[in-house]
Image (cartoon, rainbow, N blue to C red; front, side, top):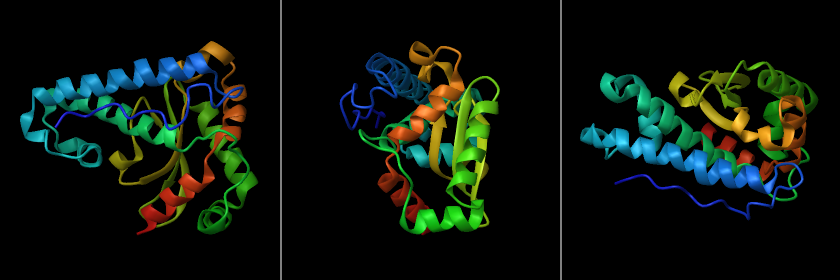
Amino acid sequence: MAFTLPPLPYPSDALEPHIDKQTMEIHHGKHHNAYVTNLNAALEKAPELQSKSLDDLVKGINSVPESVRTAVRNNAGGHINHSMFWQIMKPGGGGEPTGALAQAITSDLGGFAAFKEAFNKAATTRFGSGWAWLVLGKDGKLAVTSLPNQDNPLMEGQKPIMGLDVWEHAYYLKYQNRRPDYINAWWNTLNWEEIGRRYEAAKK
């Protein structure tokens, strides 16, 4: 079955002033949609993959036939990354996490302030296009990392908890080359309930 573009869970102007309406419309309706379209096109050339879930495609990227592996890596990665991205933001978001996630951030990363500093550094210093990630590692502990392009932590045997898109298309209309300003504004959009739910699901 072909993959489809999930709708935004809120209006395209809902994250103003932190992320502007036009960026959201282009990012979701053009960029994310292109990943879905290109993924479906790649899978037409490898019908044996068409029954696999998005998670399984991404986790098993090294077993995807070489003829379509790069296309699947880029476009399945783009699809799964963005599908998460819209969900971990919400209107009136921000603040700090609570519950099990907050406790894990304290025990594994030294507290929220230290986590935020490490995450901002990962996002700021990711050269070119990519994402910054909070992941659950194979050791069961949280870690901050970054990956190039549309790579996803599942490809590395880690579980993604939250990620920030630092491709220029995510922020250039509003912030131009000021990536740190975009990163700082993004913290005001976070849906910590959803991120906490993702952490608890990853722990199971």
